[in-house]
Image 1 (cartoon, rainbow over the protein chains, first blue to last red):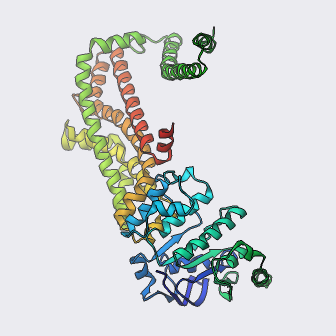
Image 2: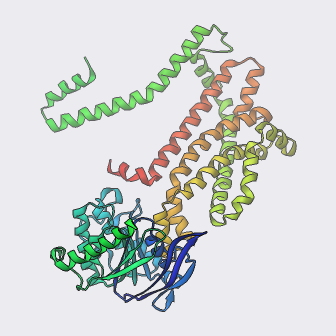
Length: 249
Length: 281
């Protein structure tokens, strides 16, 4: 079950330096939010604050009725990093089971889901025996294995080539329609963000602040054809313009 | 005729290509294994004879290899009894080194402030000259198993501590974030992530400490004991029995080498980076 997220006046400073200027945002249950902006603008910082892996300097995060810390303790969160967190000595299926065992909650049948994720026949392979795309699928399956309400994704497809990135992105969008989650998705890739997200949080360069929240008023999951849609092109151009304007300023 | 050519020709007679290839491969592997085992022995013997030839030193300083083997055989009962005493000291000391080294590293991981409290003491202990330590232990406990095993443990615990500490800190941050997000307990994170990542480092420490324990045990016995291979060396020196000293040295080296090889092989099986490859192979 997806949960709403409330980010209220959340900021982060390191001494006199702002890593993240105050952010306010209400995210509905099941909504997909992409955080886009240049490197060092605070996207990952915001994600880690929501994950309760880092404390904010001000403000608070509520996930449903809980604080971020309570949500983490209740294992309501799933984390997907750029580098897959698949344990190198475990087989793919055991890695998914491992999440369930640690979380003490079985979200779904690992074999069935790995098959749905296009990994039938690869369940017993270790990380080094899987391609980058397969490994990232196992990573996502493991992060979702305990059926978290919120999925926090930090550039999950960054290590993949363009074709694989599009393919896995569209696959992931379809998966979310089967297993709805509230998603916070950090990316540098504007087209990917527009393709997947309901809303984009566009950040300024460091010290990061949200310069605009851009909506993508097209229902998900979206087909590949959406990339040719004038609305896709217009939104991507608008976001690109915002970022270029900020970079030039 | 080269071995490969001979093997290929004999294989042609059987007339089965598949069998030919596998038997040639098998023969090559056996040949390679024999070469690998024989080469160190051959090179050591060669150096030994060259040293005798060029140094011109008397036989009690540098005896012939065959004389050393002869002594080993003739005095096998005497040497074996002392070998057992040395093994006992080395094994107990090795065990204590691991209990102290791994135990402290785990404690530092569980309670980080203890590292600041205890690490200076560990470093100090490491840097005290062993001769001074042995003298103090001799005064405190005399020629006892306690004094000798303490010396072995003190010599061995530091590499175990440092390697285990580094190993426990080598765990991938991505994996640690995963455990935090799943609200895993300290024990779950330690046993499921930190320890497997630390295993290669811990094994490396065992390779140093395991083989080194024999050497340190002999050194301690040489200084303070009336048993063990160290004592045998001391006794032989007093009687100008260089051949016996060499016999003990040869035995100790072989033993250290065996322990190193055993730990190394065990480590390869435990190491998650190579374990899968071995199974596939």
